[in-house]
Length: 218
Image: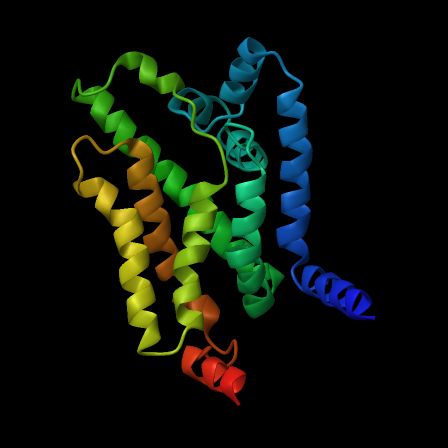
């Protein structure tokens, strides 16, 4: 009986975040496909679907869409965990359309920010011309945006601690020597997520960890 109740809860949780788990399912399939590719072909295949400067100049809409359907490195399990911890609660809270809007804004705008930084670096001679074909693929910008917007789900004063943590995680790499263009992209995605505040209005009472702990104790 306990197993069945647990299974029903899992199903209800997944049904409450359809976009998250459909996306995660697609990533599982594409990851399996990558594992069956020869390494030399895999690199060419992903580069053609990358939001690098070369592909953005040729087919911006196509690569901005397909780049969010593949994971570089082929390690799906960590993303399954992160999607469940961040994407699913955000979708259940915001609703699928608003959650998707945050994902799209963070993914698209942060991709453009990161490639803009790279373009400037090439123009100033800080990066080689070959960097126009740099591999830039995956779902981390959308994830960073959602991680940031979740701050509005947390009640004050706990929200401030969460915000400091988020800004530190995505901002500290910029203070290190030689930050990469993806470091700028991730920080930009987090700021974009925070800028999505209008989408969270009217989405219910913020979660108060103190009340949750009191409930466990009671």
